[in-house]
Amino acid sequence: MSVSFSLEGKTAVVTGAGRGLGAAIAKALSGAGARIVLIGRNPEPLEEAGKAIARAGGEASVEVCDVTDADAIACTIEAIGHVDILVNNAGIAHRAEFSDVSEAAWDEVMAVNLKGPFLATRAVLPGMIERRAGKVINVVSVVGELGRPFIVPYSTSKGGLKMMTRALSTEVAKHNVQVNGIGPGYFVTEMNRAIMDDIFLYEARVARVPAARWGDPADLGGAAVFLASRASDYVTGQVIYVDGGLSSSC
Image (cartoon, rainbow, N blue to C red; front, side, top):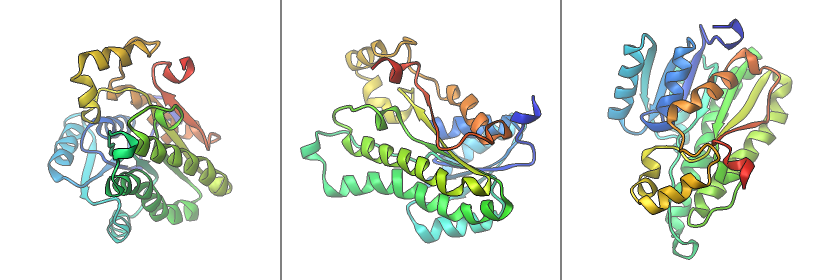
C-alpha cells in the first residue's frame, strides 16, 4: 500500500459501527492499518464487528455509548485519548408522510443524525487542533442533496450535516484538520430493509441508479480510507458521493 494511504499508527473512532455502513467503514480503515474504536448503543453487534476485524488481523475495541448524550460521548473520547480519525456514521431514519411525523420522531432523528456528530466532533477537535493533525468524516447521504418523499426528517438532518461539514472545514483548516463527508446512495443495509422487502419499490429504486444496482457497504471503503489518510491532506469541506451515479443522473 502506498504510504499516502496507510493508516498505520492511527486511531480511528467510528460511531454506529455495529453493522451496515459503520462496520464496513471500520473494516476498511482497519485494513489500511488503523486501530479501531467501535462506538454504538448496543454491545452485541459491536462485539461481532470487533471480532470480524480481529479475524482479519486488525485491532479493535468497543465503547458502548449513546452519541446523543453529551457527557457520555465526552467521557468516552477522553477515555480513548488520542483520536486521529473520527467517522460520524451513527444514524436513524423515520419513514412517514410529513404531516404524520411526530415531534418526538423529528427530535430523535435530529438528535442522532445531527446532534450526535456535533457532540463527537466537539469532543475530538481540541486534541486534533493541539496536534495540528486530524480527520473528521461525516456520513451524509445523497438524499441530503436530492429531495425524496416520506423521509423529510432524515433528509433534513443529512442536509444539515453536509453544511456542518462545509462550515466547520473552513474553521479548522488552518489547524491542518480536514473535515469531509461521504454521501452514500442506496445501500443494502437494515435501515433500507422496508424498501428491499418491497420488490416493486426496490426495482424502482434500482432503475434510478446508472450502475443498475444498490451499493454493498464494502463499496464505501475506498472513499473512507482516502479521506482518513494523508492522500486527502489538501481536501476539506467536500462530500464524495458513493451512489453509483445517482446524484449525477437526477
